[in-house]
Length: 422
Image 1 (cartoon, rainbow, N blue to C red):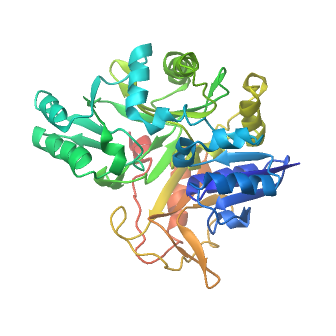
Image 2: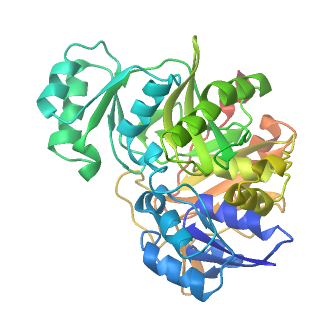
Image 3: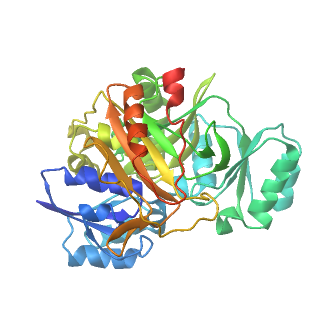
């Protein structure tokens, strides 16, 4: 029997804890720092995900057999390298390999060198050079801060003035801190967005089921960008043939390229794709499970997640049979009033015990306060349900959301609607 540590405190990590707790091989789960929902299935360690030294010490103290890293920041800090140096098994890419997300310049240069389909782009460290380039490009145009920016470092500018303002925000005003040391300016791809994640042990690559997420805060893709307001799986426009094509033309070549460059990649490789008239193109790579996609994907996984993760760590992924349920899954995020701008927290959440038994609630920004579960973040909960099809899963989610409330609660009402209405 195994002891497992999950690093992180969001709904993604709650989904991971929930899935891992269903394994017959797991005897005990720890989470650092976790949240009120995660605490149901895990022992909470009050350690920040960025304090990788304290996490390694805790893993040794509690004799952890496998550590699963949720967020990208500890991966970029080198948590995998530190754990492995102490003989600890850990699921995720090394610090060098995590640059595929931590540095958009690194990622783009890798794709261009190895012919991996992506948007045409240029990168700049000079503000003046970036401005000069922008003035010569057609709009709309996409601008990206090089480093990690909590999913908010990408700006789509519809006019040259907007693009110049974005360059100034990133490089002069440092809106994203050190992430703006460099900026990537690239063509704006047109098509349908989809996320395709894959397990890889550095050699074998096994795609997961595809999913779509919703970045804008308001219905109809209006308002500010967020960390994600909901997701669903599978998208009707991205079937098995398309998954196989992306595996052959994008996922496998990327894993092979990383190995050729001396940065073997193990863990989850997340490809954010645009399906264009010319085929799938990479918009971005991430080095971990997506949020909110994970909440709509893991309920569909019919295999033991622990078996898969250990095979990735040990280099035996080719020997594992990974099965998925045919059912569809929809997840909708309940957010605090004002999110993604300023918001207050500490409001009691009611109705959590009134949802149907087959509906899953993955906690993100929650905490215990005077024996009550209260809000403690911008994105508070992901309400998730399976169904025979998207329409049925969607109906179950929205029917149950009406039973949950907290002060200022808001959510999108059109998650997966396009799959139902066409």
